[in-house]
Amino acid sequence: MLHGEVEISGAKNAAVAIIPAALMVNGVCRIENMPQISDTDMLLTILTHMGAKVRFINNSTIEIDCTDVHYQDVPFDLTRKIRASYYLIGAMLGRFGCAKTTMPGGCNFGVRPIEQHIKGMTALGADVDVKNGFVYADARDGRLHGARIYLDKVSVGATMNIILAATLAQGRTIIENAAREPHIVDLANFLNSMGADIRGAGTDTVKVNGVDKLHGGTYTIIPDQIEAGTYMVAAAATGGEVLVKNVIPKHLECISAKLRETGTIVQEYEDSVLVKGASTLRKANIKTLPYPGFPTDMQPQMGTLLCLANGTSVITEGIYDNRFKYVNELRKMGAEVQVDGRVAVIEGGAKLTGAVVQACDLRAGAAMVIAGMCAAGTTVVEDIHFIERGYENFVGKLKALGAEIEVVDFPDDSDGAERIVCIS
Image 1 (tube, rainbow, N blue to C red):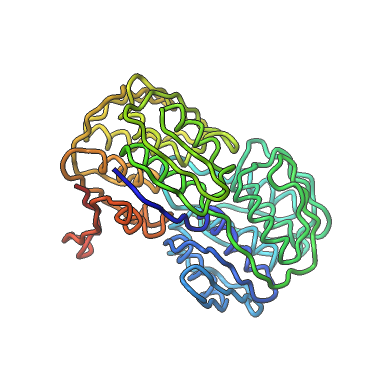
Image 2: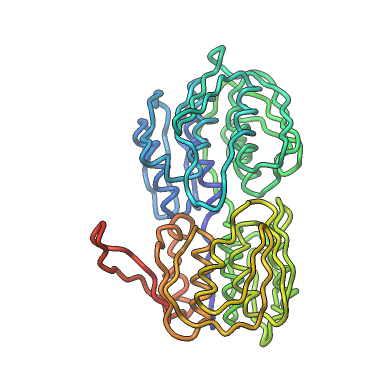
């Protein structure tokens, strides 16, 4: 059982767009509540390579000065490892009128098309070409121009990328059928605090009035909705009681609602939520949807919880084609789950037992750790570099809540050592 308090870090999905956004600012950006994760480390390294001055004030506050940055190719060995590399396209087009980067990397749970990104950049006046795994973009007139853009499907990445590109474009850009996630609002708020003119973020129509330049300033990143939800599910799954601090409860409403369906008690306060596990968990059905629907990034964690609940639960994945890879790992631990395309049927009440499992991706890795804490015996989770992409001090925070968990180095034939997590 997990007991105690946990402090939530800054939102990964906001930070990985805000760091590229700093590339467009003519001055010093002081960014607070920056999560210490490998994805942000890689993006800061990329900016440093391009000539940015990055200074750490403390563990969660940094200063980025891109005043003297000039266009140059970015280190592709870094950009190919993270999905957020595509935000460099919008930022570099806005700042320099041209961009070159790799196709998005990161977790492998389905195809990551960027057609909507390309559609947006093309409408703004860029020539975009994708070949040999690279994306090339050039503003035809040296500077982008505002346009009306209708997204054929709701896309968080495309919405944010077009906002980035349109911020320094000439004229007004209107993005219709835009995504509404909290980190989109956070990106817009960051840019506005630096002198941008963006309105409607958080609705399905975003209007960006282009400005000539951005100035420096100070901004605090919002708390991470998915990190908070992960600890909420961990508390429920282990039957514990955890106060999850530094959150925006409204951002968690879809998660809180589903946890309450399982019998979990969730009490909301001004900037925290208290989660109390039920003695007996109940089944629930979930369909992942764009915000404010249930987030796809919480699907593996809830899938693990529902393996422990009484009854049959159904999860329908509404965002990605292939996000049930973690199910094979759960089956190794005794879970009964059948997958057909985008639908998983979970026969609850499983008695999980320890096994050697893989973190197939970032959120699946967190789900495996939750399963390990609920299983009898010892569980070993491999490939935890995925977990480190999006969770700051995950093992340390869980240990502080009473989990028996540690990171261990094991010999590996290929690179000398492989870090894995042992849970008992």
